[in-house]
Amino acid sequence: MTGERPANPAGEVVLYWRPGCLFCVALRARLSFSRLRYRRVNIAGDPDAAAFVRSVADGNETVPTVDVAGRVLVNPSAPDLLAVVRERAPHALARG
Image (cartoon, rainbow, N blue to C red; front, side, top):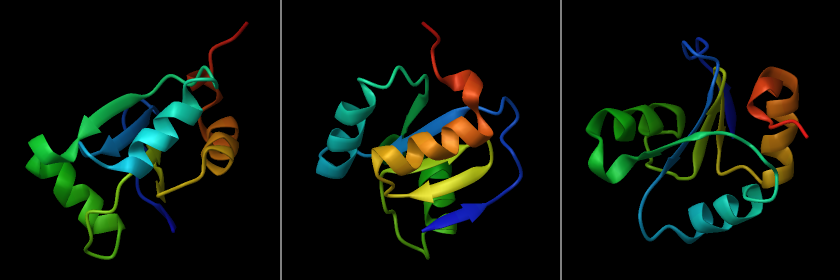
């Protein structure tokens, strides 16, 4: 599932996650080799973040959910996420 919302102010990549989520662990492991710079937000400790995730995931707290400069992806694969990053937030990919 993907969605659009107004671009986040910094045009950054934000990964919403929850402790114990194996899908979150798997995505973060795959991203560790990508050189992607992103901010992590634990929805278990942030009611506003949990509400945001519910607002884009049909009322569910489905994680990982990733906001890429305003484009929201719910439970994306690493290749799908990186494709959106290259399109919308290439500055988040480290050079070199």
